[in-house]
Length: 112
Length: 114
Image (cartoon, rainbow over the protein chains, first blue to last red):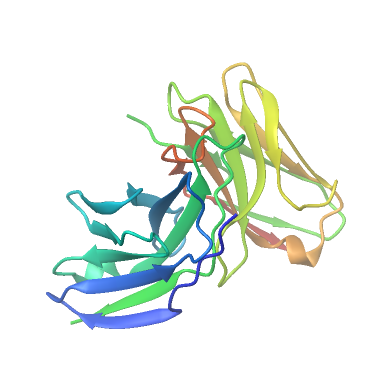
């Protein structure tokens, strides 16, 4: 499985855009990139998933360059409630077993 | 619609005891996975079940076991508890087995071993 590297923590302020970059240099052809969000004492929540270029939903955008060796999760105009840990995951397409490999994640603190 | 439900929410056990944690997946979901999350770390995969069969196992000792019932609910059992087993145990359900399928997590069971 591809190893992921992301910053341990980031601080931001309400209303700002937060960009979290994840490195996955040995990503395989069939790997998808998925981001999860986790609030304290809760289970992770799926945010967004992509394979290449750009994906956008009502919560975030995911930018993936052509070489796919990194990806950036973009959270527009964050609020205090966006304070959470964000995990970048890389997993092969239709693997035998729904094993999600979480790293340490990025702790995002949104300040007033 | 009810999400993934886990019981109990909190549990305190003594070293050497046994514990059973329960999980009910989202209606229609046939895949259930279990994760252990130690404080300050990301969740670690323990087991995955699909249609009552084990489809994946993480790097955990044989003290950990699980099963899935005909209604797709699941139990995680841990024998001979150690202090290091103290963690948040998370259950996730998904429609199918594929790892690019969105997984829905429950709130978890906070287990404290004293």
